[in-house]
Length: 299
Image 1 (cartoon, rainbow, N blue to C red):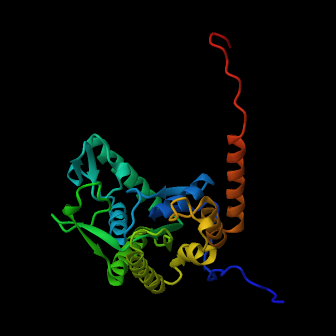
Image 2 (cartoon, rainbow, N blue to C red; image 1 turned 45 degrees about the horizontal axis):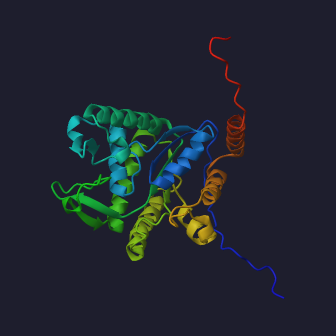
Image 3 (tube, rainbow, N blue to C red; image 1 turned 60 degrees about the vertical axis):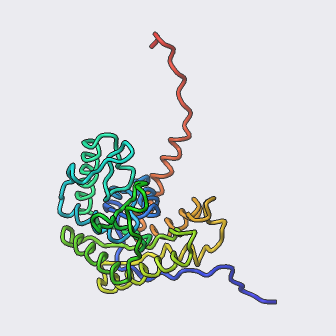
């Protein structure tokens, strides 16, 4: 009888040379996967800022956002355009689009400055890349962060090479270290399939990013690190029960598994304990019965 049968291939983690404590600030930028990861940290009491331009997928847009924050270069009216009744920015996700341009500009600058403050003092910055596929605005040749449902004939679709992605990553890292030399940068690759209708393109896109990430990490030992979220979902979990209904995004259980591994590897034991207590307190508070309403005119 065969013994010790393994039903799972496990990801082996390196010995990371640092762990952050409970007081550490965290900055994050990148895809929807990064948004979910950092949001879990924030709800457990970790301080910081995340995605100053909203969800970003490609290395060029991430560099643009980080560079702007590090320089504290404000957005102006000229950075926004009107389309379908809303004011949009080519450097921002649609969540920043507003009916009034002034509101959109103020919102963009408030978010940028909050992220800049966090970046200058944080212990860790998490960068999550998702796609090498980009859209260039034909009129200017600039890579956009979001197309905002503008007609496709206004853009040219391209795929960034390993060298393109590496250059963007290196410039991003340089910007961060320029304002915070003590920051440690954790880079991840989103496990979400960005182009499910073209899995060959998706593989090309992800592989170009993965090569660039490892080249960047190797060039900055003890300052940049790779967290294998992509491998955890696609190689260790590797089962559609760990995916959401769209069969693309990780399910809540998969997100929790990846998050737990992240905390285990990058936070010290005391920080992990405090985060767990904070979450339990929040859950307990959410289950408290509401007090009976006081009738009008009574005390």
